Length: 273
Image (spheres, rainbow, N blue to C red):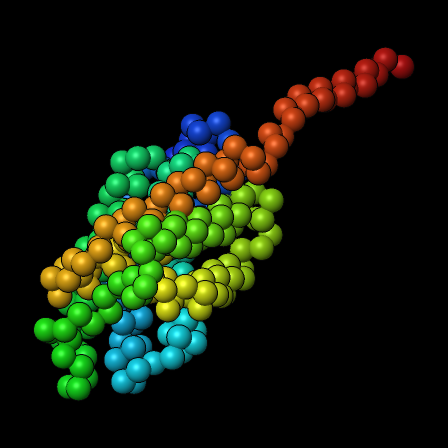
């Protein structure tokens, strides 16, 4: 928790007020200004996200959807536990966009964090290519690339990713809500289970990316751009719509103005004897 003299606390309070929904966001988290510590946390966190989630699929020739979903959920919980207090552990342009829509941070900070996430994702896949087991040709195959399933139209894939992005945005908006300020300790586990559930739901259809950075880095290294636009159009659009809905419909009501402090009682007067 930031103290009253902490400049970060002053900066963050400004970021909460500027959107007009000062009671919507909880008091902790990343301030509105660009902080190098937050950018470093987003870069390292997204690097770990791509490396560990993709590495989890390299140990088995054909991992089951349940295996992939559980691994992804617990990896997200681990990284959020490590970096939530530094940058909010967004790890995902979809989440960063939701925070921008509800006014949690300003556009410059959001853009800088998205760039850090993309760079971290690229670094994570590069590390995977260096350390993947011998039976996985990570240098020349489309390892960890997300693609719509056969028989699924592109517009169906976009819609599924949009719904997944909306669900992820709603979960994060709820966690930022001041009314949830007493439910912070379990947040890493809750968001990890959320990711696992969404992965189980749509992993066989679109790969359940929910994260443009997650799809971008493997596509970049493998030069597999087939239907890649689906993952930039789907989850971010759903996230923006859900965050706007939360801000407009479910934000916490503004608190009434505090009453002015009562005047101190007058000191008693004593008459000389």
